[in-house]
Image (cartoon, rainbow, N blue to C red; front, top):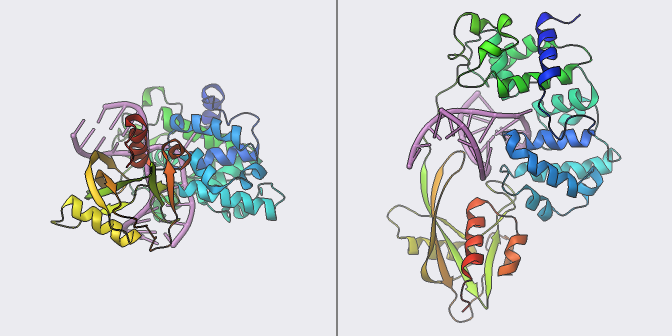
Amino acid sequence: MLSPLATQILAWYAENARPLPWRGRSSPYAVWISEVMLQQTRVETVVPYYLRWMERFPDVVTLANATEEEVLRYWEGLGYYARARNLWRAAQKLQQEYQGQLPQDRAALRQLPGIGAYTAAAIASIAFGRDEATLDGNIRRVLARLIASQTPLRTPQSDRELLQFARTHLPSGQAGEFNQAMMDLGATICAPRQPRCEICPLSAHCQAFQLGLQNEIPVTKPKKVLPHYVVTAAVIVQNGQFLLAQRPKRGLLGGMWEFPGGKCLENESLEACLKREIREELNLGIEVEQPFGVYRHAYTHYRVTLHAFLCSIPNGNQPSPIEGQALRWVEQQELAHFPMGKIDRQIARQILNEGIKCS
DNA sequence: CATACGTGGGG
DNA sequence: TCCCCAAGTAT
């Protein structure tokens, strides 16, 4: 027996499901890739990446046998790059331990790198028809409004309440549809701001709407102010080649390539900062020749203003990475082959556009 | 349990 | 310009 709420949302979904490339007769692999790409990322952003990815890595084995570098290149621009490396590692685990097939069980899925509580239940329900409820940002907001929950979202207490409610309405055999329907509803009607309650198929079941509280719910925790850092980067040119360094596998932009540099200390000049950073990281003395560009960027938890400088190396010195990071001298035309975050890609593009004189 | 982790679009 | 936030996960 379906609950009236489940009946309503499934009927709405049957008419209003967004036509997305991973919907329809998609493989479990396709569902997996789409779910990971969609983590904290908008549908419109994901679609072109998804299509390119599936063209190049159509199945688990193809992905497992690719290089990490190429995987990151296909991910470049999507952000949260640990997702790409985890996908690649998970593919290798699937190839070795599961004959290249995704497991169908939520608990087994949960053991793969990059698959957490949400994604495990999403794949189990969408790709394998399992009766699993799940919570993402959209579903949390929809459910919180349905029960007019005053509990701040993304807390263990809130998740317990919401998951319990979701399970009582989960239509057996149609959990995947139910979960996707809730997400589509959250994305298109039950929006964070200005929800369109007048056309919502669930308004008759929605306590927040009945109470006129749809703009007050869900309750969210106050945000913190983002710190701002001034950083420098060196475009080091020698014999027509540019020096690139690979970032550590863990942490910000893990495994991506960059023009080396780092954070300025208090009261430190840009040039002094750059020389110090290059000395610390590469045990290398450089000559700072001229300003190359200024780039502003906001990451999730801080902002940066990056000052890039054209630099040279006096008389035959050579860089030697202190932290064991990889270094490469790269021709202009090769820059495109190295996965980079947004700022470094902008610098690389500018190098190509301007055609740097080589010393 | 709090924090780190990217980027782009909309108001 | 600035703030919000979007199909979360790992530590």
